[in-house]
Length: 166
Image 1 (cartoon, rainbow, N blue to C red):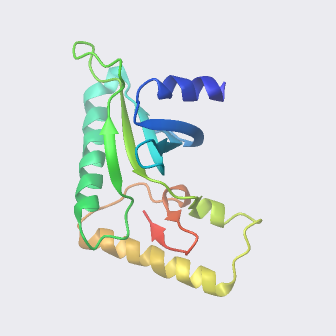
Image 2: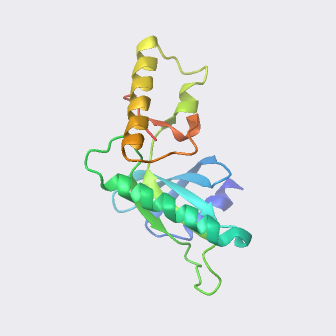
Image 3: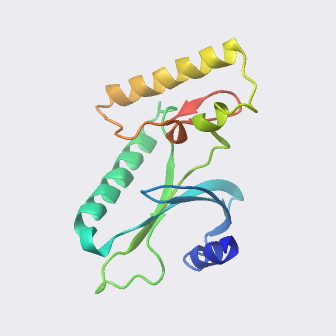
C-alpha cells in the first residue's frame, strides 16, 4: 500500500524521486525524496485541499508558502526550514480548481519527538544545547513578527549537531 501511495505521488513530478513516508498529520503528509538533479535529500509535504473549504485552505497554504519563502530569503536565517520548491499535481486542471499542493523543503533526520524517545540517550549538555537552540529559533520567529501556531515536538527539527529549526 505504501508503494502505491509513493507511486501515486511520483507521477506528479519528474524532478524528485519519492523514497518513503516520514509522517502524516491533519494538515498533510510528509515524504522523503531525492532531488534528481542534485541528488539531495528533501522533504516534500503533500497537502490535499478539501473541496468544501477550498478557498480557506488555499489561503492557509499560500500563507505557509509565502512565509517559508520569505524566511528562506533571509541571509542570516539558520532557524527555520528552507523552502526549495512548490508545485501542483500534474493532473491539475484550471476548471476544477486546485485540489493539492506539494511543498519541497529542507530535510532533517530527526525531530524533537524522536529525541525524547527512550532509545535516544542524551546527557545534560545535549539537553542544554537543544533547549538553547530551540529558544534561539523561537526568538528569531518573534523578531520576524511570526507567530507559529503549531509548535510541537514533531515540528521542531534537529540535526546531528543539535542545531534546531522550526
